[in-house]
Length: 130
Image 1 (spheres, rainbow, N blue to C red):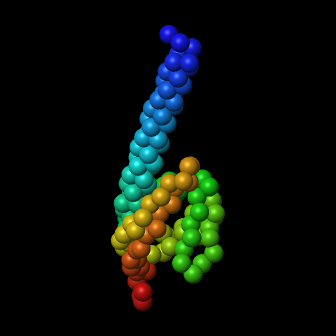
Image 2: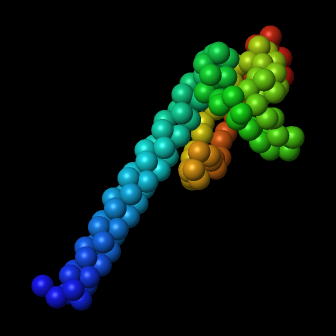
Image 3: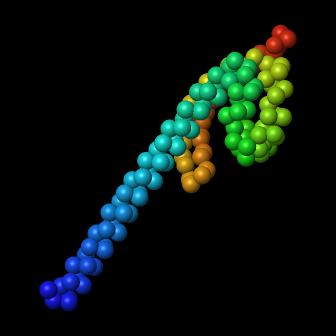
């Protein structure tokens, strides 16, 4: 075989191998992202159960240690400690009923985000006006 034909075939083989590796790598990454999005979407029903049953321990366990809560009209709460400290009084004093609707879920590397709308009804455990 001529040296130029051998070089051409070797080049084609290397390019084809690289393309196959890239294709399999991309599919694996896409599958991983889809699995992460599915896992994120599974957490929100558990979140609603925790809120609706007043189970603070379950609710706080669903947060990452470095989670960020961005409630409407209030400053962001950063980390489980801040999030728990801000939420605990509501768990102690209020019966709550939440319905969550997921609008989108995204994954960027090790960061997962959801955009949701929710309806939250609260009534004081001690009775009185809501």
